[in-house]
Image (tube, rainbow, N blue to C red; front, side, top):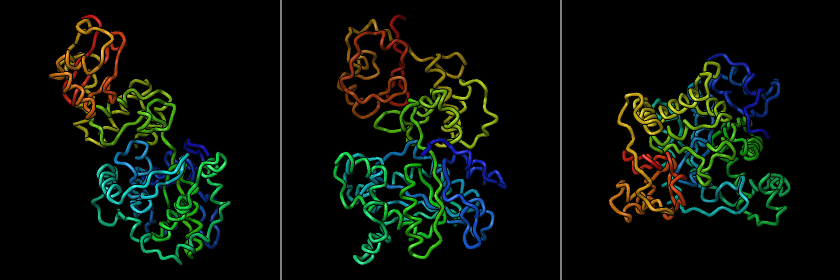
Length: 419
């Protein structure tokens, strides 16, 4: 399955700029067959012929507290359906999150408590608020799948289980790999795709959104809707976003992510370094800017990308302030937008040296103890990247030459070998 936007999806006929955004960057829409007399098997035709807003579902399992730009892609697609006049359903998987989606996992996921899920769900809603229209009546339903999944009795559970075979479950990519490697697969994990599919039955979804890794689960929803006498939903898949390293999928554990809760300067600083090979997919998937009117120079594209995305989450004023601060951090005060970043000569430090000692020696922190606490609390960044290793050590000053060391949002120095 390709993670790049498909030419088939993008060639579907559209009638307005709002509908054009429905297909922008889409990897796959299924089914995508000519319509029959009884049922539309083509989303473009369904959109043109429907006499009511479609119910468009996006399910998110709050298994963690933070959302990054990769997570934002299907949420942005949900907003596109809102703007085209359809009903967006943001489904919080507060019941399924206690199990965790086994997709892409080589081992069973840790079970979460209901309190953990509830807390994570609240942070998720806060983070997607800049993307979705929460205010216009009728445009957004926020639902929790505990509403119906907690009410299922044993007979209903057995009916769900009887709709799939073990062989069908083992055809799912993650299960297949674990089975071949003789890693244990627990029965409750088999139940996950059925529960996610049953969500579509409960919500009477017309369209379900998800990443390309969710095709199996969305297809199960179609099968269950058919089983319960409903018109099967369409699946609309979007790519999985590569991280800022340009190599691996965006992930907090790989430190190649841009978090939606990050401050404007940190977000801008990361995005203005976007590798050339990521500029086109980032513009396509993370902005609504016309792709045929982007600047020619890659550096200008990087700046435009960073400014646009920071504006989405922090507002135009904060984005421009972050851009000015980033210019100062990288170039000094060459534009008259603020004070140049103070320089700190590394000749004042004996190497090898731990970073917390440099923080103390440079007066960014009052003591080594405070410096260690700042690192532990996530308040220290080196060239825009958060430092998490309290004992991070550098063997020579050359390894730090020219880098910007930051504590909090307003304290910066540039480290130099010789002033």
